[in-house]
Image 1 (cartoon, rainbow, N blue to C red):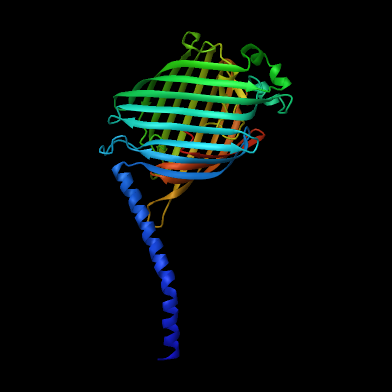
Image 2 (image 1 turned 120 degrees about the vertical axis):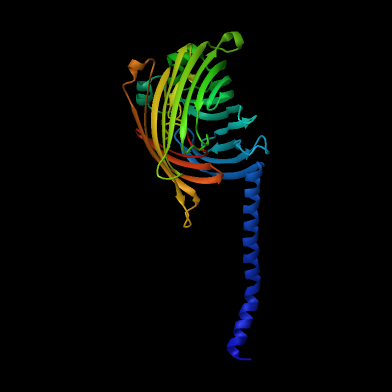
Length: 383
């Protein structure tokens, strides 16, 4: 046997384990993909765990982890959308903790939708006061704005579809704000003096909605118009009596092909009555003007608008990839009536998207505001 042939045979024998391992790895990958497709087609429970870093002005550096859960409430219904229940947990470098879940579920052939927001936070926080001037001019420090905030919020909503795309419903809202170790600046604030360190607010409300979005958690097309009126009363256990009225309008346009989307939002929330500082309308959250300190800008009423471009890349074969990006421009203002909306806060940002389940994305955003920025790690789109 020639020497070159012998070397080739020996090299082939030595390579067999690695070739087998590579083939085994490819087989397992194909099996996982096939299992995922089967779960999607049959409406079975899908779980995707994720962990990553984030930074927000109010919480500092955060290590956040979560699970995206999705399922069909009736696996035999081929037309009903998958329900989603992402759960996020996080701990911060400043000793804070949070847990949240934003529930979107579809029942009874989409006649019934049960949605909800559920949050818990315990964190060192800052309260700047009420109104644009206090939010912008009050210096952040241990003596002017600092306090310890414990907060929880539960807001389930039940909607009935009485004709295609048209819904009516009811909501329940309960939240608790408990402020401890207030700095001198917080103690001297007139709203803090009126409402005190602890406020329990309980209310109910009515919802009227038009929703023609193709996939509500990540729409490529359609329109969403949602009006809510919420009523909080001492008669049902609330510490304060007030009302809120919110109008949320969104439009989604596909540009050239699916995966290239223009998303537009206009939102206003109006508060009336004995509204405590912890539940006033706010802008600068992870779901609107991303990049601002959550709670720095608050007042009885707010208004904001967002224009966002969302782009999912294509693979070489022309099919949709799991990767994409987004960019947005936004602005918002606040006041105790619409005549006070003079000062408009600028906002812009970019983000990365990774599809972790069908039409359900991991969202990584970096947002910039007036003298501030934030880096966010979350599931699903901001709106």
